[in-house]
Every structure is written in C-alpha cells, then in structure tokens.
Image (cartoon, rainbow over all chains, first blue to last red; front, side, top):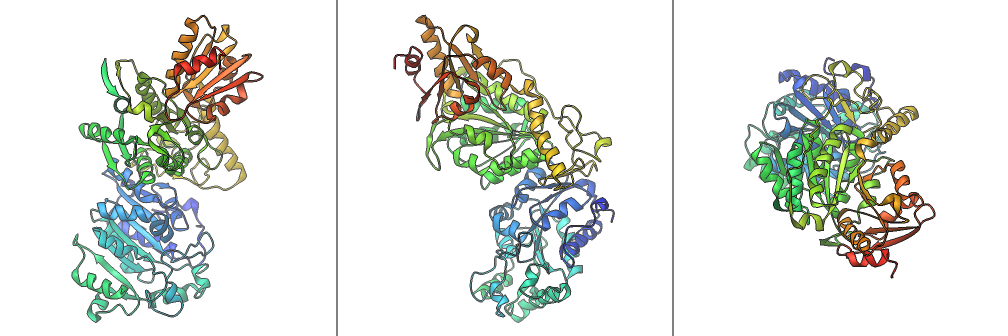
Length: 261
Length: 368
C-alpha cells in the first residue's frame, strides 16, 4: 500500500474490474525492480485506466485523451533521470492516440507504457473499441472476419520497440514480471494487460468477473506454444514478443503472417 | 542594429527568455521558427523534437514544462486548430507554455503563404469549457523580441499558456532591429514542501506554486476538475471555485498582463484602433493624417486577452468615430464593440496583405 494514495480509496472501479489487478501488478513490479517512486513520473490518459495515475503515490499527471505518450516524451527528454511511465486504455492508446503510439515505438522513446486492454470503451458505456474481437464474440476465431482488432503489441514490435509483452490479468505473475522487465529496460517498452470489464464487455459474455477472466484466458495462447504448433489456433498471443533488446524474431513474423492471414 | 527575419527575432526572444524545450511540426509559415529553435537549442543542451503532429508537439511541450523547462511550440492555421485541446489542458493543469501562432489566411488549408489576423477569436475562445488564457500580439519588429520574452515571463508568473499571436507577414519580413533592449527574465515560483498536501491552495496572487518533479512531493495534476489537494472532485462547489479562480487569477493580475500603445486620446474625437501587423499601417496612416492637420487618436492593442476594461473604456469613451483596422472580417471590431458606446464604428479590413496606409488615411479624412 505504500505506493498508493490511501486517502483516495476506494477507487471508482467497478467490482471485479481488472484495473485493480494491473495496478497491483505494477506496484509489485516497482518493488521488484527496486524503483524509487520518487524518481518516477506517471502520465495517464483518459478512461477508467487513466485513473491509475491518480491512485499511485507519485508525481503524476492526468492528461488529454490519447496524449499520454507525447506528454511522457516531453517529460523524459527534460528529466532523463526519471523513469516515465504511461498508463493508457485500448481506446486511449490504439484509437485516439494510435498515431502517437506508432511514432513513440518507431523512435523507441524511453517510456514504460502499460496498456490496459479491456476490448471495450468502458467508461462511456460499452462502445466498440479498436480491439473488440468482433468475430470472436460470434464464436469464431480472433481474426477470422469483419473489422480486425488492432493488435497494439504486434504493431509496436514491428515499429521497433525495445520490449513488448502481453498477458491477461489471469497471468498475474507473468504480468508483474513483464512490468519489472519494462521498468528496467531502456527504450520504448509496452506491456499490454488483457483485462476484464465485467460491466460493459461482460454484457457480451458474462458479467461474472471470474467467468470473464476465464473466457479471456481461454482465448489466449502463449507465443512459445504457438510457435511450436505453428499456429495461434485463432487465439490472442500472450507472452514476451520482443525482449533483451532484440528485434522481431523470424518465427514470430512468420506466425503473425499465418495468424492474421 | 541587426538585419533579421521576424522568425529570427522571435527565436532570439525565446532563447533570451530561457526557453529550453521546443516541439513542433512543419507548417507554413511557422516552420522557420522550428528550424531556428533546433539550431539554438542544440547550442545550449536544450530539448528539441519534430513530432508526429501538432497535437503531439503541444502535448510534449506540456510534458517538458511539467518537468521544469520553459517550453514552446510554434504553429499556424490548421495546427492552431489542432492544439486547442492541449491549450485547454495547460490551462486546467496550470502549466506554463508559450505557443506562437503565425497566422495564415482563411479556414481549412486556406492560403498557407499569406498572413492574416483571422485567428483572434480562436486564440481567445478556441477551447471548450468557459476558460481563457493570455493572448499577446506584437505590433513591431522590436516587439517580436520583447513580447516573446513577456510571453514566457507571464506564462511562468501566471502558470498559464500564452499565445503569441503574430502572422505570416511579421515572421517572413526582414528588417533592421535592435535587440539590445533591457529585459527582465522571470522564473516560475516553486511549491514549498510544506504546501505539497494542498498544492492548489493559493495566496492572494491566486497562482499556486509549481510542484517540482523527483522530490517526493507526489503532486497529482489532473485535467478533471480538482480540489485544493489536486484530487478529482465533480462537486458544483469545487467546480465553481476552480473555474472562478482560473479566471480571476488573470483579471487580478491585469496590471502585469496589460500593455498597449496610445497617442492623442484626450484631444481627439476620432480614434484608430488596430493591432499586430495592421498596426504598422495604422501608425503610418495616423502620422499622415496628422501631418495634414487632422486631429486623430491611436490605440494599438498588444494584450488581446484578457482586456483591461478600465483602460479600454477610458481610451474609447466619448469618441464620435472609431476606425478599426484589421486583416479579418470584423473580429477586432467585435472585440472592441463593448467599449465603443455611441461611437460610429468604421471597419477597415484588408485580406491578403496588410492594409495600405493611404486607404486608412482616406477613412480618417472621411473622404471615402
């Protein structure tokens, strides 16, 4: 709790929301990484996820919708001694802020980016987001038909980010571990958390939080397993896609090709 | 004396004022400012980036200012439209920021290469949510220097964004200019550690101290309506308290903000009102008319917002004829409207080039 503003509790988040787990993983990762929160700056965007900045006990700034990354860049360039973290949702990072994400990854800006992807516009009432897996909701595979969900981690991997990972909130240990890696890796680091929104996304699947977590988890496949099988089986890839500062692996490129084809 | 372009003079002013971060995006006619800032900032270890768009440029400048640097962006027409959301953010978070708008002609893409004064109302009112910022307009080459410095000083003193409203004519002109003028450079007042619990509680200045990063103050700057602790609060009481303070902090400090130029006000029933590049023509026209024995007053506005109501009333009261000279279809006329009383108001507009002095002179001599 020492990294949380206790006087702001309880949070505004609904019962069963995944944001709490993501924040929990982050404060754990801060300690795992040995990061002095005094030497960090937290930038957050708009939406339920954007509230994290206001709950963390740190110098934090809650900015305009989609603009967390350019604000974070200005801060990092001016104060290179600080670890600058940007929290965004899927609408924030991939819809209104998509252009900034593309260029932050391309420039390999030294920003630690956490995207909470609940696959829906939660705060505004459950509208479709760029990551809503429309075909999957029809019982089909992730990318089989219709407008394809935008895959932020793959986009950042292709654009040249230094570290890219995705986990669901059910993979809590891995999520926390990836956040630690991001906090200790130079360059643009993106950790996406596939997160449950029982209220809005839940309308489409189940409003029971654990059931929704399981629904999401069942629709993911670890990248190593997919590479071994040579197919993602129509599921969402989870794992570390870019690590150790190494660029896109040929196996992953091949897999992405097959997976989105 | 030096022979410089308007862009060069603005850049010299920004560097003199202590600007150490610039973010921009190419746009005519503001690109030269960006190019020159990249050269100057590289000499002093400042921060410079060409960003992916003007939204990102204004956002990054805000991020740099949050981190303690005096920060700036420069843009025009379409870019000025794009940055409005982030001007609202800087107002709400009370983050010092200087934005140069080198105005160009017309809506949308318009005429990129031709200057205008058509963004006056946008500069003042372009954001949602009943808020305002500072708008300064240089009306001579020397003022491109002094008012750029003033823009940075006021941004720091008032913790607010400042728009330096100039235009394509001014930045592209080359002229002899002396930059040896005395100037004062002011830095922001920082927050004391003892006030970190309520970082938005203010003294009588109504301007809170600026929270430093990396010192464990843990200050939250929130674009949501917030209370004195900086925490989001949607209550009508907190909303009113914050929004009224943001307005009043500008009004209360109007003596520091307000600047204008006047001549012959007490002895004439006719007055010419102008600003920016149009004022260069207006001054000349007034000289020409006076040399013919015509009694005419002149007001050149330099602080375009907020207005000093007392001064505007004093200057414009009781005039029989008010001639408003601008390069827009009646925006300055609208701005001075509340102060002209029963005066006949004559609008002299010129689109595509600054108004010709002899055209204004004919209106003064009432020969049209």
